[in-house]
Image 1 (cartoon, rainbow, N blue to C red):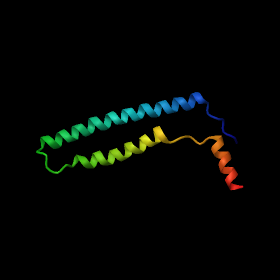
Image 2 (image 1 turned 180 degrees about the vertical axis):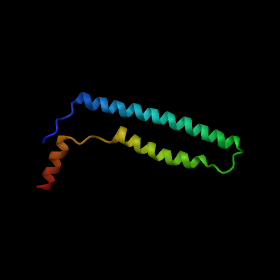
Image 3 (image 1 turned 45 degrees about the horizontal axis):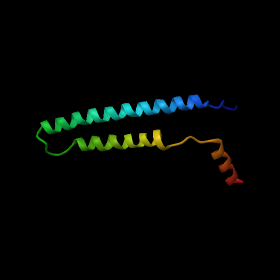
Image 4 (image 1 turned 90 degrees about the vertical axis):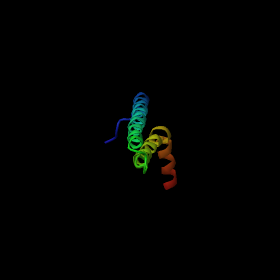
Amino acid sequence: MAQEPISEYERARVRLEKKRKFRSDCVAYVVVNAFLVAIWALSGFGYFWPGWVLAGWGVGLALSAWDVFFRREVTDADIQRELGRAA
């Protein structure tokens, strides 16, 4: 059964929702990690343990940024080009 194509309006809405979620994720990253760094500083500095959270969460945020800003949808032209290679 063929799937109904998604309208340009719907694609734009989905992109906008992803961008808004990414901005919210960035704010949460900054706020939470600032809080952790403050705890680290108030506890006498020492080993910089918040770095583990900063790095781990940062990798996830970078992957999310890739998905939101650089990954593009598969188009009909992409499918036709791939079919041409298989022939």
